[in-house]
Amino acid sequence: MSQTKPFEIPCAELEQQELFAGKVLALNEDHLRKTGRRRLACTRTYGCQANVADGEKIRGILHEIGYEFTDEPDEADFILFNTCAVRENAEDRVFGNIGALAHLKKENPNLIIAVCGCMMQQEHIVEKIRKSYPYVGLVFGTHVVHRLPELVYRALTEHKRVFDSTQSDGVIAEDLPVVREEGSKAWLPIMYGCNNFCTYCIVPYVRGRERSREPDAILREARQLVADGYKEITLLGQNVNSYGKNLPQPIRFSQLLRMINDIPGDFRIRFMTSHPKDATRELIDTIADCDKVCNHLHLPVQCGSDEILRRMNRGYTCEQYLELVEYAKKRIPGLSLSSDIIVGFPGETYENFQGTLKLIEAVGYDLLYTFIYSKRVGTKAANYDDPVDPKEKSRWFRELLEVQAKIGRANFEGYVGQTARVLVDGTGKKEGMLTGRDEHNILVEFEGPPALIGSFADVKITQAHQAALVGSLKAPQDTEAEHNPRPSDSSADRIQ
Ligand code: 5AD
Ligand code: SF4
Image 1: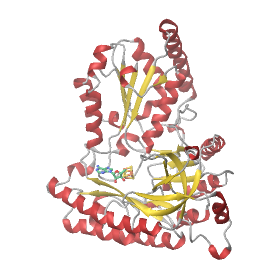
Image 2: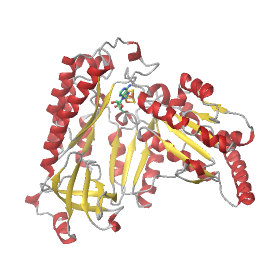
Image 3: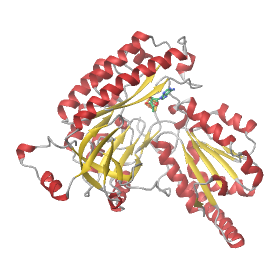
């Protein structure tokens, strides 16, 4: 079935929000006239990049309705937590942080404390906020971000708590304002929601059905980002490989990648997340062909046991996964791979876990993002028997980290002597040092002038550390020679 109108927000609703935006702006301007200072908002976002991208829209709207920003909760008039529900520890952190604000609300009864995001799409969590956190004045879920002007207006004027956790298959709201995080990297959502229902995962329940943005809207935004000087664009979706399948005019993710690659300018393209069940050879060929697409593939395998993969509802076997990796390694010289792993899925045995160790050794990932299974209310796996002691799971987890540390270390050693093109994003801990990420998203530290922050620098890698590479800045003339290598040099000395 192709994607039709249900996901689009009717124009009339967006126009109504503009009216509310005008009303809040007027209230905030009034506050400025009376007090001599603008109202300040302090926002915190937890969790994945999709949430970060939502947080940027929320800040865009807050800015539009007259708020300025502060990082200090105790000087804010509006504090917002944009929450993540993927694992229990993320939720615990949010509750801890909300709890710590009780005294601020006592000191300043006009303070609005707002909580939004994935956690607020879960009934039991909203109930807990309702009952145990009476000073939280505004609660809203992932499907109503575009209604923020109205919600803030009500919170400011109604003197009662405002809740909106509308359940929905999800929406697409184009043209919302965005205040991006500082720096030269931008997140660009290309699709929302997820239809995969991996049995451990809460995302499909809190972010609605899979829906793709129109390629024209994405390209317009990408062109604008390049024109604004962004040097790295990361295309976001829970499963980018199924991008465009349900659009009225279906299009494949690989086609979209090629279109973005054709935008003129010196920038690089990343994407996440790529679900192995939908990753194709065409995708690999596209990465190989497109000069701006980083030679890095984040391909979350989750575990290395076919039985557990089946019970996770992942839709591939270890053999299929390894076949694709094999093809990718052959097709893309210098490819860097990373993955997500869950340890201790309900019913996983030590033998199953050994399969994971075998698989990560066979692939040789540069980086792994590792998690202990966290039970999520409402998911299928929450009903599975989970007999293994948490302490035992922690032992397996530590074993995984040790094995990966060796693999990563050996890979990192392999980068020594190569030249990495680093997008410089800040200063290091030691004076005079800069940090940035190479095209594999590996942290690189080197000595250099702060003027380089926000641009690309060629860095000769000299040392490999546990979680970072260390190098020295190449003089521009060396760099030039390398940018024009003799044919026989090919790209042997370059990481990318
Ligand atoms: N427990 C532990 N890890 C999880 N992830 C998703 N859901 C859970 C869960 N219930 C991990 C997966 C996913 C990453 C974003 O988070 O590895 O790829
Ligand atoms: Fe969760 Fe699976 Fe969807 Fe990823 S693909 S968001 S792990 S359900």
